[in-house]
Amino acid sequence: MKKAYLTVILIQAIYAGMNLLSKAAFDGGMNNFIFVFYRQAAATACIVPVAVFLEWKTAPPLPFITFCKIFLLSFSGITLSLDIYGIALIYTSATLAAATTNCLPVITFFLTLLLGMETLKLRTKAGIAKLIGIIVCITGVACLAFYKGPHFNLLSLLHLSGHHHNSQHPHHSSGKSWIKGVFLMLLSNFFWGTFLVFQVHLMKSYPSKLLLTALQCFLSTVQSFAIAIALERNPSQWQLGWNVRLLSVAYCGIVVTAVTYYLQAWVIEKKGPVFLAMSTPLALIITILCSAIFLGQVITLGSILGGAFLILALYSVLWGKSREEEINNIVENCLPADKKECSELKEIVTKSIA
Image (cartoon, rainbow, N blue to C red; front, side):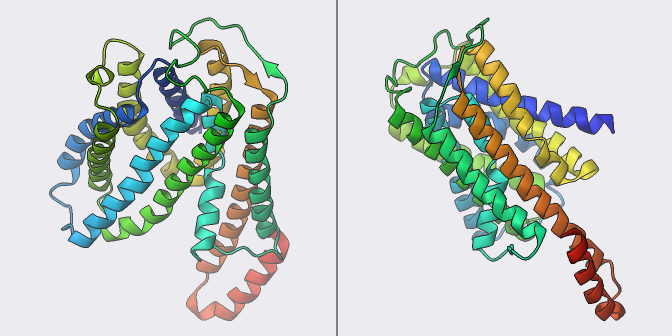
């Protein structure tokens, strides 16, 4: 289906745009905590009316305990994740932000493994593929953090931020700052991974998806405002003119949150979550090209190699997951009376494809 392929390309292009515009805004001097607040406020203003219109009448009651869970998950998985992402982006680059996104499925799998929600069967090809994915992911992160190598500088046609580095962050390009940025980016992905893992359980308690998303956006707006106002009192930092700051806030808050939410749901419904996850490396490719051309950023060999390792890790884990799902689907489709035959069939299938 051509529509599905064109849609995932559009989704990854939108995410690449998010990395580029966020980086341009920060390089232009915008405070990252204020940026997160404005972004979440724009997302809330966009999604709340739709959620109330579509699901308010059919929404289940919201117990206080469930509300507390939503509040905590919004704080760790959205507010902290985005704030840390902003700090990491200041110290690193849009290319690195896109590269580390590829390790999200690996981080999510590792979290589910620690929580006992996943198993790692090293006697099967699927289990070995998952383990290889984790090891290659660690290798990719180490490559991003500690190796730069030769530099590649494409012709800069246009600079969205007006200059390459933010004067408020003079140590942006130093080795220690880069390493710090890499691990902060990983921490941001870790918090986002916990959000994805626990979101599954939360949706069982409160199944109204749009209202849940709207409430999480609203709570994140309140939380990010509290953090921003505590850390930045300068009124000039809160001003949004007709510049890249306003463009980045509107783009990340409205396009990324509202448009991609619908597009991703459509792709998952048509082709499944694995198909969507396998398109993630496209964002890295688009970001590398655009950051070099529009932001004038220098691309290092270490970033390219690290990104390649993370892509290999992504596909390795996804391959292992897809093979295990094939086995589970075969067993689940068996009738209860055929349990013995199903067990034998599972062993045969495991030996043949896993």
